[in-house]
Image (cartoon, each protein chain N blue to C red):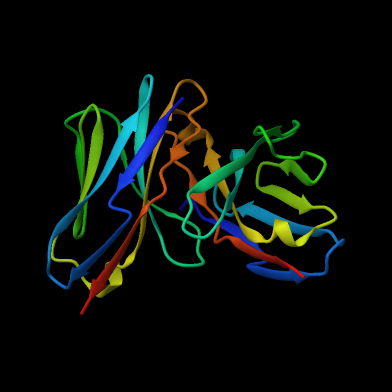
Length: 118
Length: 110
């Protein structure tokens, strides 16, 4: 149980284009999803928290107009990197917490998406 | 603000050479301490949750322990397949959003 699927695993795009990354909870309903960014040999940096049916809460320093997050259902959240630039190249990881995890804090992570902007 | 410090940053072991990874934390009202394993180019894989000092959990060659200030991940007789980055995270307060450490990169040589 507690499987989170993230797609695509790798994406290469040209500067100025937009890229959408999907995160799905396959066997549970994810009331809350989190999006992280990870640089090489660095820790996971929380970008935003999204609750189903409401606007995402962004961490300080994260541009909400650049990183659009939609959590339209209990099993799907999407991150769209708009007008991507080379500095947006990174490893993006989503995670999900089901209702049972509210009292435990346990997160289940997707496989990650490697974004390369040329 | 919650803080998590993991040490060492990197650790190289010979197969069968047991060792421990450290996770020191500062938090106001610990709700849970979590250990994850992350393989290169992959998302973290959940290992353990510890809730209170004195608690221990085991899974195969791994054993996690918790005190009021730190947690240890003990690896007994490691194998090359145990090579990975091990992440520690803590959650506090009502939001339960974990704060992650930078991880310990473990390499086990055959």
